[in-house]
Amino acid sequence: MKVTDRVDSRGNAGLWAGVAVFFMIAAMPLWAHAGNAKQGEKIAKTRSLGNCVACHYLPKVESPGDIGPNLVEAMQEYTMAERKDVVQWIRDAREFNPHTIMPPFGTNKILTPQQIDDVVAYLYTLKKK
Amino acid sequence: MYKKISILLKTLVLPAAVMLVTGTLGVGTWAQAATQSGNKIEKLTPSMSYAEYQKRYEKYYGDFTAQMAEEGNPAEFLLDDGKDLANKVVGSKGKSCASCHGKDALQLKGAATTFPKYNAELKGIMTFPLQINTCREKQMGAKPLKYESYDQLALTMYIKSLSNGMPIKVSIDGPARPFYEKGQVAYYKRQGQLNFSCAICHVQYAGYKARSNLISNNKHHADHWPCYRLKWGKTGSLQRRFRGCLKNMRAKKPPFQSEELRNMELYLTYLNNGDLIQVPGMRM
Image (cartoon, rainbow over the protein chains, first blue to last red):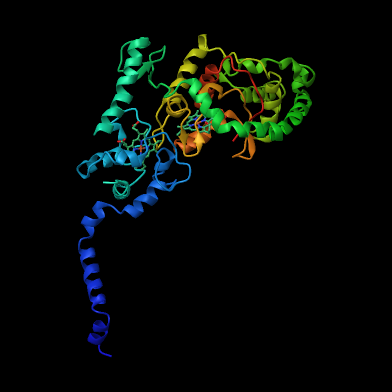
């Protein structure tokens, strides 16, 4: 069987997949900046990482804390244009409230900028539009 | 945006208004309070009334407390051993606690109510476990007991239990005052990678849940130690609990009976003046 036959028999799926992967890799820096929501969810719910659920309600978590606002409700108030505010809340909430209990995840290097971006990407998936 | 404003209102305007009304604060920014000697501490106020806090506490621990009373406190096994230790002769001087404090050290009934207290020789704060070790070394010529060891906990617990039901009455007058203030500053100091302080949790957010733990108000924090803790599966001291919270804060843990922990113990115990001693305690 010739190579071209094989491509034909799959209706060019393999070729298109290859093209897609190529563009994904090419667009990597941009895509990474937008944050990986799946990673973000893991970070937000893992005790040794973000542990946001110690204080905030997030869906599908057993007994989340109630010290901070419910993040599903909170996220309904943020537009895409306000993304940098959400980032800042996590980077260092003292900018908004100098006496906050929320840990300064960025300033104190609890999370990397990439991890914070991932968490924010996850938070935006909670928006019901 | 709206959310942010409402938070600002809650966190800035409300406490400021409360402060204006009560007039408890002199100069300084709205969020700082000064101790007598002028040390600044963060001004934090409880997010709910004590009555509301108690309601939540009872709802959260209700069953557990009843169950506990039924099953008994494993720490009570240490009491008999503590009594034996109080009568046991050790050290180069051929003495026991009982040699100075009567059979079963019964003359020490009430002693625990005034600890921690200022000690001139120490030029600092004497806690109960430290007092026991000081007696052993100076009066008995015996080796100090390792902190958190079985014998140290048993002896502390037994002698403190002689004051059960008596109100705490710790003094912060005279030379004790600066140590009390240092303890207060430590209690309010933001520390560790998470930037918490003891007070932000046990004053401001008492009654809320950190994950599934209901954060307790510091009102009854000092009256039940040594205490059996289910999570430890063991009996421990108040300072062990301090170090546990410090670890959770990802902060430095000063050693047992270090100056910082003794000052904090004085501050916290003074806050609990009037509470009845109840040793050993039991917690989750």
